[in-house]
Image (cartoon, rainbow, N blue to C red; front, side, top):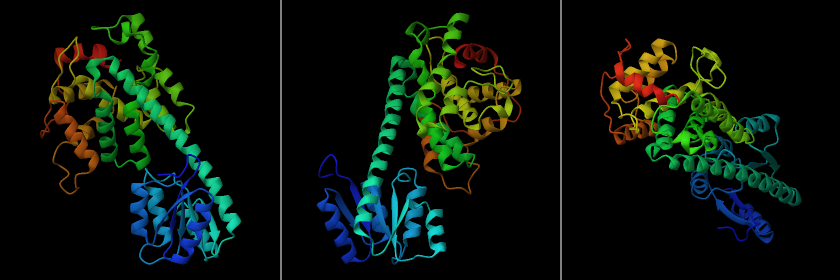
Length: 369
């Protein structure tokens, strides 16, 4: 807990008790709340439990040194935005370059100039607060997206399932942690623009007219505009705008073709269609996993979807990767599939697109919206 609304949370990591005590006295007198750690394991545990505004990190410590601790802080999506100041007696150019490589935000000589230390801490706390404000805005966006979902009782849980499915597929494709995080967030925000769609169109229990479809096709544009002002959503923006594009150029809103469509948008599009197909609607029944697979492979044959991505998605639930331990994302997609009334079965995806029949025609009337 902070001592006041204006105080910052500072974590001092140093195996030298005298230095930690001196810094604690100085910062506490200025209104900051200070916690300490004497080694890397204790520091990482403390950051995971109570994220600080700034970390003052000694470099030369037993076990994990300051460079490795900083690297782990910056590699974790939950803590990478926490400012880290390396406090060290090392002064060589090589040591500073190594600090930059592991993501350190600033450096202080040891012993430090106490006025300089205070100035750096004050500046970095302001930076962290600004970052927190952006994250709060991101949370507001997600809450707004969930409110849109609540408008339609038939889409209950859709955003959460999509977030899980998309992240699982991203991990299966060995995408970066940043891309997987964007896919997870994109699952919640992809239909943010539907806030502009009137209930008479959004909740219509049947196929949309041409005029209504024109209105519906505006939602990716509106959603993308809502995301434009947040730098933290820069990877999510193309997902929101382009998840209704098709590889042959017949999608919307921009009619992009093939590699013009961002990969993350293609991933979200596939899992979006899967979830829409396997969820009941007033105008059609939910299809089975096999039927959904057949429909998506049929769309691949038409030139709408990337067949490799479709195959990869349906392979996630099959036990073909026995050499890989099941990840958190994969476990979550298994849970999502089972909660959806589907079963993880072998042989669900076949290289030859199956005939989807009447189910496909009925389903595609609204799935693509």
